[in-house]
View 1 (cartoon, rainbow, N blue to C red):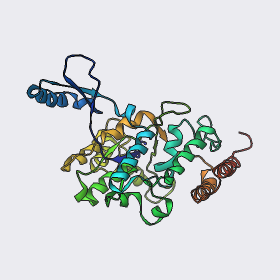
View 2 (cartoon, rainbow, N blue to C red; view 1 turned 90 degrees about the horizontal axis):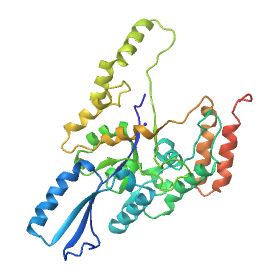
View 3 (tube, one colour; view 1 turned 30 degrees about the vertical axis):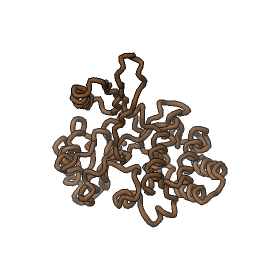
Length: 332
């Protein structure tokens, strides 16, 4: 799922796999491997397997844990999308045009950047890792399992997901509670997982998710300034942040109160795995912004529209690079 009050998270169904393995033991028994992602489930799943093999001594089942981060990559995302579409005719992953909940994540997973990490001034749109990731993300809509942007102009990915027309999309953790409340008939039919990682990044370990921190503010002058400042101090206090967290509004920035945000989710019949939002803290990337972005943001957005409409990607990326760098202060 990115102060750390916002994080993107992928919404998808989780499955378990049972596969046959080679019979190298030479004992005449059938050897199976039961693959799971959650180490916390190992003992319970092993108990189930042991109960089965106690009745079937000719079968040996090994519970094998493959961590989600090892398994869940772009390749699995597209592979699962293909299987879903082939089996149901519904969409798989819905790659809609967005920055925080879209291509930015792929850029940083591939080791690229939107603004240089050293000075946060120079754009990276033409940097190879960035360009390759944007091309990859945009070209996902060439698959029949992914809607194009004309579809999203009429139907948001969230609407498609909760009407059971699409299986996966990137979502912000700040929307999870409202979605549980707004779609009660879907409770128990969906869950969340970490964003898939790039299987072969240009640099890094392939993991990234965009974080968006927020803060409280007020005008520098005002009739009730002292009272307002006192209110803001309470909002940022441990108690204020705890109340905010328990309401499910946003993950508190106050250290030690982060977990209070998960409390409200336990009131539902099915508890979605909100721990994955916390798990992504270690490799989160701060929301991309700087003092000049307001001047070049619209140009970049316009070029992304042109890219989706079929313009030459490299030429559009070059124009995005030029527009961004044109606002870099001369002394930098």
